[in-house]
Image (cartoon, rainbow, N blue to C red; front, top):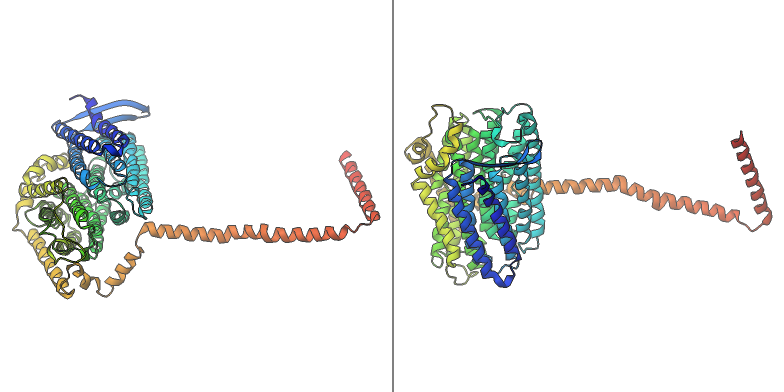
Length: 622
């Protein structure tokens, strides 16, 4: 394989994006066939690239150390393969789900353009190409939300653009600082201590990476997009692509660019961000009554486990965070695709309108249940494995509080999915949804594939741990460090795992209590917790978007503009509308009185003017 082959993952999806956009609506079948075939080719090359140990394509570009530099090594090839796999499944799914969408052609073009930018970002080995590809994702993010077809889709698209743009701006500032500290823009040549100016660079780059992954407080556009954007978009970008890219860059920042130390300031900062994201987002997910919004908050909460794991800076924690990245992309994408399947047949994702769909949609129900159990950390699925590794990593740091936060997240994650699954598939049928049937194979197959991978990566976790995860961590581990993570993953009978099982049992009891207190209505199972003193007030403030930095920023700008209007604009208006007008009227009145029609007065004015003019000339002549 030649180095120039590294251009293929970038150029092929970009060319396909243009072709898909130009194909007329009448040729939809051709468009769908081209999309699936193109995604299949990219998946084939993803496997091919994964078999290559190291490859680099670098050509001089803009001078001053700015080269067009692409590098394939284990981590980037792993991400490339994962991106290609999700692209293929989404392409198959979209052939049915987006079939009747008014702007389905644009959506498919955006999907492949996103793949081109994402592949470029994964392969970039120079900061300038990285920023170029990274910023290109802003365009497709805005476009895919804007074509959602809802009245508020445009507003949500702008919100996503501004929040993501702020995070990207932070990344650019961090890149600039790191470039100045390291003296090079070549990413593979950088490894500095996060102190002084480099510490500021770390924080800024962390914001850029974590913001892309959807960590708090840069997450607030995701629940809005769950309502205003196509569900296919949610399964594609927030659930899969952005998590893979954001955590990939965060791992590179923490492992490659900076030397993160266990217990160091930057390590603790990451763990704080991770723990807060886990707990706060899962509490918001618990009380949601729309399936897509519930899943969107879990897409945020699960990022916390990834950040917490990487932030521990110990091998098992880092491996757990990276493993959770790929696991999350699997089950969260599967969950969103399941929600889309329900929406496709039932026409709604409101929990109170759904129920008993397992009988009519057994394959969708099966896929949902497996993915829901996986995200909840139920043994022996993949989510159990990666979460246990994160728990162990958090405990190894000596900061038990972070492990406790992760366990709290586990409790409410399972409780909210018991509520969701019970409401949609296992509750009683409602009159709001007529008899339905299972979704077409193109919708169901990707769900079942992702569910099967959740089982495979859990039961046979040695396969992904040895082939995918350990080679990422090994180059950064100290000599003699324990890198056989299968012990953490397989041993169910240890204190940490037993605590996790206890969390699941407690979650079940919480759901059962809420179900009985809510009149045996599953969608009300969270109301007893929701109604606790102080909790309800906090939720009310959250629903009013008091904790949303974007909304509060908009209000602050509106207040500032009103203050400027009162302090600057109104006084100017007063001067021109009142003062100048009054002075003009006064002067005009004086002139009117002076012009009385007597020629003697006019003659006197002329003589006086001549005298003044003569005097002025005389003074100037001196």
